[in-house]
Length: 373
Ligand code: PLP
Image: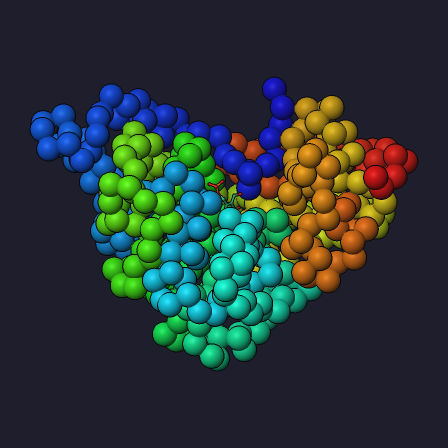
């Protein structure tokens, strides 16, 4: 069995979610009006209500999608379409699910203004929001560094500009109240909090509602056509309810493990930490660079010892590229290619952290001998 430190990539399915999935797995099409369809519909309604309750919104504002990526695409491109296809304001550290949706709008005529980001990976300046835009988008927390962004201030500064918030790394790990936030749309993904992979959630205010990006039978308020996966939605609702009930205890447990690990790894020569202080970061994230060691070597050498972690940035044909997020933070390219993202979660223990803290100095030494690719 490997020791897993890649919770930001995906989290193990919660037993409660598996049970809920099995319970709902035989249900049919929730749009059918006969008895079995009504049973499916009732289960889907329950899931929607549970999610609304967990995230501070109305059930009608919960739209099921097939991934966080799809929820982000609808949020960004759908709002852009709905509000006149004008200017977009975005941060330069968005996940590709948002960044590439913004880029797609740019090829269709949008002008894009990017926000500045500080060396700590936190957006610093909202000046582009002074002029109204079609849509503005900022992630709640960054998937690589774990840096929590000032989303409440961002929404306030946006005024009448509709705002999409990518909360994929945050939902289930940090309290989210959609109405208190005041964003227009918000994206989440079930597999990041112990739900099944392949279920996304888009929270969408009644108005302005995003236009669809795929076309079909008009399910989910016409925002996301396609027959909803009732079992997936039900499993997601149960995973979320459990995750939300554990937020405070898990956050302090993980923060303690992560801060202990950070302190132990600080003795490795040259280590650079890209995760901001505990107050400004998700509790389980630790994003480091070991100058002179290639990310790919670090990951392979750890894997050989049964330890699973990631580079943080995109892998292209098996070669890890310099992280765009680190480059946007002003990190030099060679350091951005020497990154290692450790993300702790629900099943990690103090023994796991010991194992990693003991293995890493030698892994870094050997990766440095191999040099940067
Ligand atoms: N947004 C962020 C911040 C993410 O971390 C991810 C996944 O890593 C996504 C969006 C995409 O979510 P999904 O894997 O459900 O498509």
